Length: 156
Image 1 (cartoon, rainbow, N blue to C red):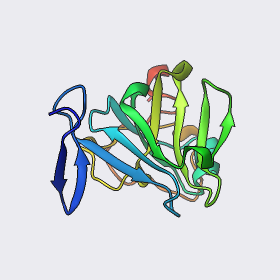
Image 2 (image 1 turned 45 degrees about the vertical axis):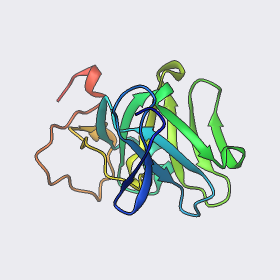
Image 3 (image 1 turned 90 degrees about the vertical axis):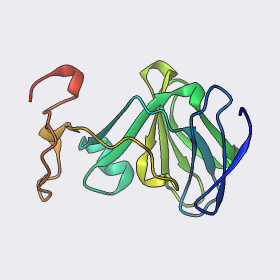
């Protein structure tokens, strides 16, 4: 099935070359930059840190993490504005400013900004992180676990 095209919800979706994973599509606001990512995310979280709030202009950034080799910019890569270095950065569309993804963990993982996905992923955020620095005007009203810092740093 590698490389085969599948029609889903009126759109052509490519099957993963590595398995039977579905491939999701995503794009920036102006649609200059488009990407594909396997629907095989390892985790998804809502980040309330001040950096994520500033880069998204919202109360928090819902993101899903995946190994870098399962994510590909398929068009508009030359239109990316990279903030950071080669192994750790945020990637924005240089035309509309949308934050598309962050390269993290020494370049091994991509944190996809879930709001840029065109297709619905199988995963949903499982916790709120960095609530110690959340926007004071925003109230978290769901029942997901809340961590003062990162989930790996403990401290509910």
